[in-house]
Amino acid sequence: MWREDEVLAGVAHEVEALHRASANPCLREWFYEGHVEVVADYAAKIAAREGVGMRVPVLAGLLHDIARTVMVEDEPQLTEDSERMAREVMARHGVSGGDADHVCAIMAVHSCRGEKGPTTAEGRVMVTADAMAHLMTDFYFILPFKGWLFGGLSFEAYKQWVLEKTARDFGKKLKFEVERKEAAPRVEALRVLFGAAGV
Ligand SMILES: [Fe+2]
Image (spheres, rainbow, N blue to C red):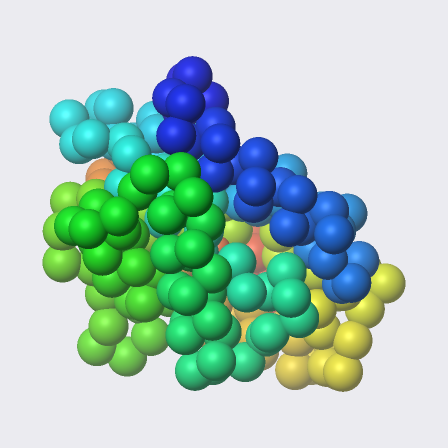
């Protein structure tokens, strides 16, 4: 449904092209349809149900971590470069001012590390959508494939990363009861598979 919005479709087209042109095979071959579009789809669905405008959460979903396409992986550069690139893309599609600031504010806290987290309804929709895209797809299974994204990590270190990230996904990012209920069995399965008992 968000694809019928001209601005969102234009931004998505540009974001997809950036992924296809990436030097990173994971970003080029999987990340757009495997993660970015999934976040946008969940964001639109949750926004509609919660009575929140979909433009800001879908934009934040499409643009979060956009600097990964140009091989930036580590913080704080990932957040800084993603904001700069996101503002450039949005400006080309007529999104500026308060909406652009709001999208960037959500992007900056979307990982929910430490005390960080969304403070608006749009932000709560986006972080829930991001967590659902991690938990309800093959995200945690595909990333070690061919060494994608985590070529330098041992399996033990990868397991630790999964356990920490699923804990943030479930403990901090799922802001609505509908999604918490839907994701709970998946979280439990992931945590058993990757080495911790139960949720
Ligand atoms: Fe994400």
